[in-house]
Length: 196
Image (cartoon, rainbow, N blue to C red):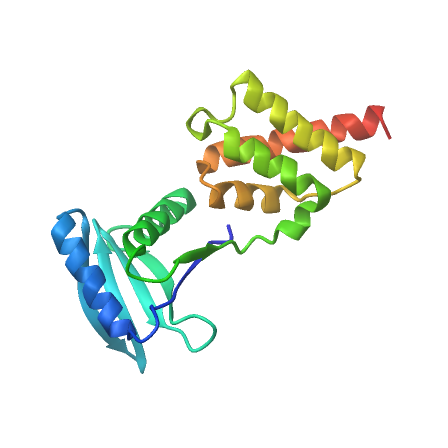
């Protein structure tokens, strides 16, 4: 699974520390599961730690195009976080950061160029589908078949891993993403066999 990245930009003239303090105040006001634990210095790396239930989210200063980024989300009670939970926590943090940071952006680490001309039909399917039902509604299934047909017609090969990763990053539960990748592979194999 390629985990997406969240980049944060401070409004003009504001420091990262000022934005973090404003985010901390917002979290206190909302009285939700989020809290800011402040600046953590570890091996010459400065990170701001946020807690979400039994998870720690770290924000690091960034020296490139952005002011900061989420470097990781780490569980405190288990050895790993399911990828769909990671994405959900990242989205929740981005929503909290809205209005404090300038347009917090989650950037996919799965490059859409892997999907070529089939990408618009994949976006249409995923954007319109009921993700909680696994895309089993007849209209969702029809849009997914359209995606398979376009990738076949345009002779585009999409790896199961790239499709699964993209679906998870787009909010699909991990099991549903794997099921859809299997359906994609079956559909492509069937079309290649009978419509070479």
